[in-house]
Length: 312
Image (spheres, rainbow, N blue to C red):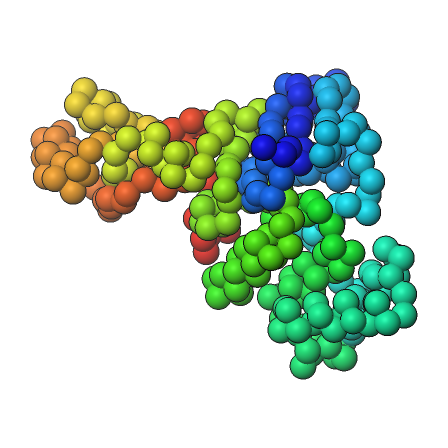
């Protein structure tokens, strides 16, 4: 197994009180898509900045392909905020990015045309990018990030703000890039669907730490049952009523009036749950049953919820 990135006990603090990441250790295999999954503030972006050399760790060791030194020509980066120049055309953005990485002449022109075709931007290539849709700008961002054919690609929240159709299209392009070029991709996201769709391996981050690592299926299987989500006005009382018979997990935001019950054969348990709540005069506003997903697994490990697709 070849290792693209190895982190050993990496730590980063801001000032005296804010610890962004602490004792962070992870191993990313070469040629894989690895996702750091967690909500805002979990440490994903700080880890991203350190690995792309935009910030320095306070302590710990970082190896890239077995070396402590990183040749920046081997990495590509697509940040959360777009790097596209809105006053330039799509082609001009790619040409400039290519020149920054030392491409010239025929080689540069061929690479730009190749990427415009790959990302289906040929028809818009000579239009100002300010007139591009969000999905088109994000595809151009991705094309700019790989124009120099990096071995290692960093994607920080690559589909935030995109509609579901554009997001799905970008997912397919990322998977194809990884498969065709053999790139290693490190992805940070708070969309569970994104990590599930793309990643070979996932690390859950919470408060600057990695709390669990595994494949998407391994993570979901650890939940151990269906998740029944209950919304009611008296969620604390409902949790107390159900705790005697069920594994009840309270939502992190109390004003959401949500609680989650994890149990096998969730649909069959609904009548019993409703009976128990009705006996205590607790009115249920809504109740749903779902098979485990990565959000349920994250809730299991951290007590916090992650954003579902389409939520802000």
